[in-house]
Image 1 (spheres, helix red, strand yellow):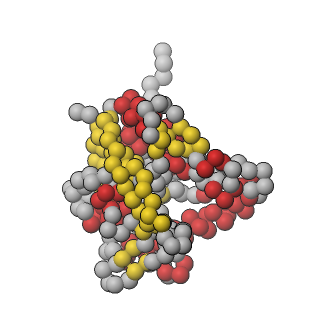
Image 2 (spheres, helix red, strand yellow):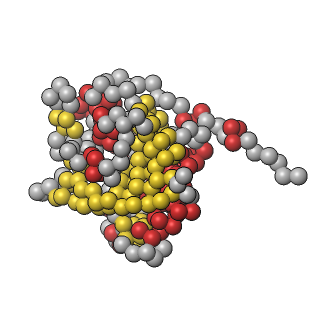
Length: 268
């Protein structure tokens, strides 16, 4: 006789809601996204500026009254924008830099000095988390926050109406199981926002940036539109693509970048 497995036996303690951090000093934060606050405070010069573009960034999906999970929240722009649109938001981010994988290069810190690389990356990750809490207070947010291993998302027993992952898939070394984990958390829709897509019905994925530059070792895969459709079709979702844009401040002058946003809606 096969042993039975009760899904409720899967340990859920890793997914506990975080007690709000104290309001951080702005100088201790690393801001991924530009943000404006009600008190007139503004964050300029961060990596990306999506201000005024949130609706198209999430495929114009209606969020009012929905529960929403923002996976890889970083500085929280999508979480706070979804709150402003009427969603009840849970913001999720990585627990520890030990979770991260990088494209291997013989002389990279990730390969040669992993312990130091983890410590340095945790310093950056904690700066991102502080930027979220700075925005949480600045926006008067009531979003709950969960820090847990992203690889364990498949174990989480909670469900949300909508799951959003903005510009995340290309940074995941094993993206198809990641998509399946997101789908398992969504009652209604998964939004893969602003991610590079190969425009072909073939079921393929290609490396990002040719894997030839150690400075870009955080870019893994671009999936084809056909592969996205196949994965989500297998999981019971219909897929549409919409165009999204964001201003990248890593260029001088800043560059407007356009990528598709995928909206997968559960059938039935």
